[in-house]
Image (cartoon, rainbow, N blue to C red; front, side):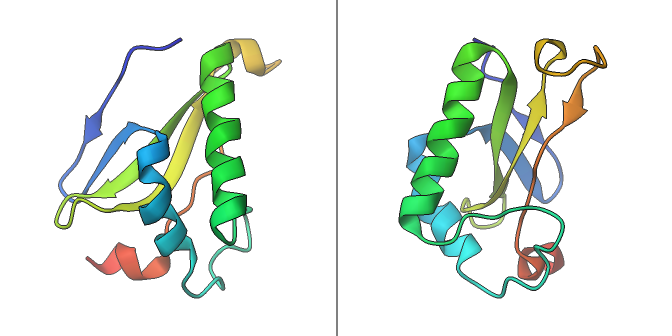
Length: 108
């Protein structure tokens, strides 16, 4: 298990992903999907629940560090990203995993 890291920037904060982020993530993913061509984004609450549960299982196993992307101005979860650990990648380096946020949040 990883320590609870938080990364804060001018517009967003990355905080450890938790089940409490489900409503915000479901709402964020419910808008136009035309910018999600390069990554899979869960559609609907059941799919989002599976996505979060799988990410939490990866964190528990030590394979990844999943984060919710929080819009600082509103405090809402607007996306998700994760970092994979050396143990989960044969290249022995850390790498960013799947991440997404709706286009409309990029302008705020």
